[in-house]
Image 1 (cartoon, helix red, strand yellow):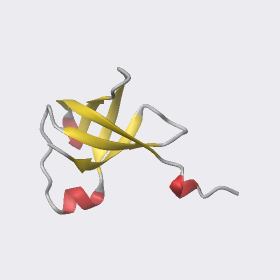
Image 2: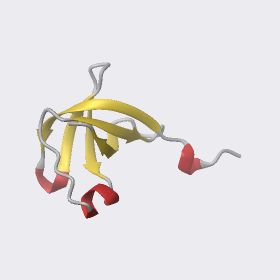
Image 3: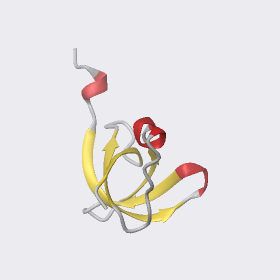
Image 4: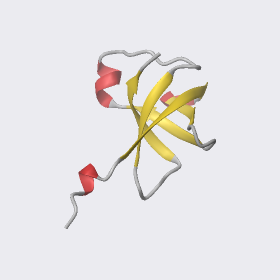
Length: 74
């Protein structure tokens, strides 16, 4: 049986828009747009994300339209 916690898809994308409630629109290299929120560790360390930043997004294989921002590369 596969470990569900490790079944994440990591993709780099560019933040295009900041939405209400701490959500962001991230455009992926293949042209798709994903709605993502900031991971807990980034929120605790107060990492600021602005439009135009390059970020790493973790996507679930079950819902490819929502993700978690885990890294900011600016």
